[in-house]
Length: 131
Image 1 (spheres, rainbow, N blue to C red):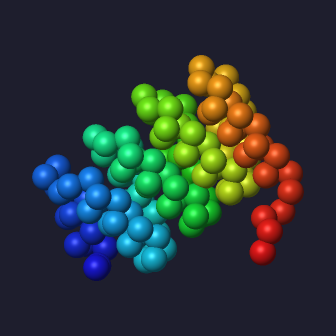
Image 2 (cartoon, rainbow, N blue to C red; image 1 turned 180 degrees about the horizontal axis):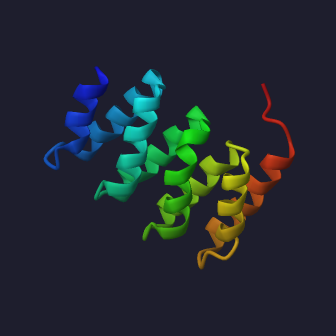
């Protein structure tokens, strides 16, 4: 699918959640700046926390610093601990000063699993990503 087709699919509230998740996976295969921007939009706007979780996961797999702003906002502000956890884990794969700041903020999350993920993600910043 093209980026435009995926954007249309993801922007339609009548699209079932499983199809929106598939679309996030397709965006990973595109891996373009447009795909990263669309994943950030999904992370910020999709009504389903499982779909937002998938968008955060894919941004982490792409490990592009362009995804850090959306991931940082989700790590701090998303109402779902599931999404915050995945955003924090994704930030662990993108070692930038901005992602480290977001991870340090996540150490204060009220959910212990999010805090533990932030601890692990900060440790990931100190060691190179394995091949």
